[in-house]
Length: 543
View 1: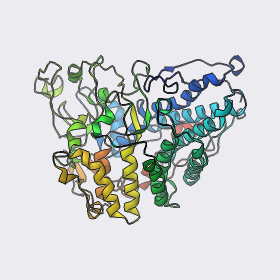
View 2 (view 1 turned 90 degrees about the vertical axis):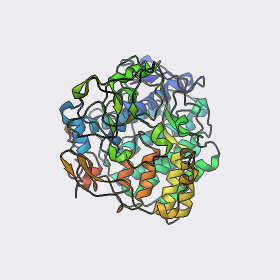
View 3 (view 1 turned 60 degrees about the vertical axis):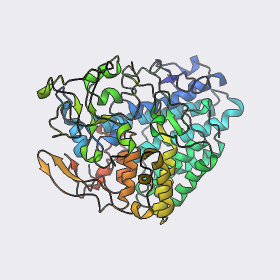
View 4 (view 1 turned 135 degrees about the vertical axis):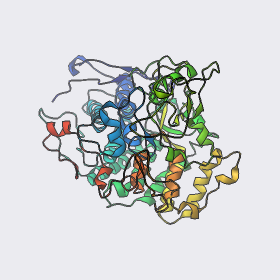
């Protein structure tokens, strides 16, 4: 199969041109035959950008990877609302771990991630075949693209495990890739990163913002090593290597914690000292309808007047009350990350409910949700970690931080904890906590002994139809899992953390019952649409 499509989502972006960090523009093109286009080194920014854009799309577009990571977890729920949100039961199935091979969430995660892999393979082919000559940048760019491709496989090894490893673009007609085991995919990713990392740039500037420099690659490598036991099906336990990778980032001196966590998530966050690798977004240029819609996804329609949004929010997702109850009342993340209480217009007028059985009553978000099958506008704290700028469209202009320095510190801390060094782990956790307890600094301090305790999450069913008591004291290193929940809420990762701590299928929460011996649910099924088009694929065990 010859090169037929030059660009799936060509990006002309000053992320790669050095003029500004967040002016990201997607331009869709129809098919362009290779013989009609002769790229040169001047087109490098556009070519690289086309390989990066799918990361944002697979992660943040509707039913994307962020939803695959958060909605089945103990963090979030989409209950039926007065304005809908039943949608054929898809959100309930996600919450209750009853998804099917036909559901859209795993399908979109699979399809969009492979779009990114295909884009990497295409640009690599153009460079390696000589269609584009980039001179002395060739080795560095090839290494960057291979690490970028490995990052897409990081998504797939986490969500699906056993996937095809496709590394060529110039394949014959009718090519159907063979399926690799999860362990093989894990080892491939590790090899791709470690074989190319020394060729990557060490620059931390506007030119390399939103790209894989050496430090972003070490962060990805640390994530792989931290999840080694899960991703390799128990054949690897690479926590020492995780610590080494984290130390590379720490010792670089390129990054630092923000004095306030909220500064990482403001609208103009491109200059944050904490962000290592981000998805650059600017509503002026990024035009996908659901490019970054956390505000519309969570806030009630009446909140349009709170922020003068150009679009009316839809009011769906909220936080599970049990999860909110784990926060210390003096933890400043409880106030900065969640929208709660009485809501007001931008002119300070009290907002009222406009739907359901509470029409005319105050719109005041409470930490209660009666059932996944029925809720009112007031039920559940709403997402508020990212700043919602006044006058925002349906697309937020905040860059989305995929890797940040707090994560590096806590990955190292977890690896230290798992290798018997709880006290040094506690020192790092305390460092992250200090900025969140400025009025009660004594509460920021955590000990190694505390990190070895169970979770304070009060697990068990908690809706109108059923109530059980399970608690979290039996979770090994459960307190550390709590720390991750407090620091990384709304960042699209909770499922992965729960799987690593053995909680994802073993506990009940809200309207979700424990899965019993169905540990196969730690992986999503391979979408049926893919099984029908590739006879080499075998469904994941249990489905």
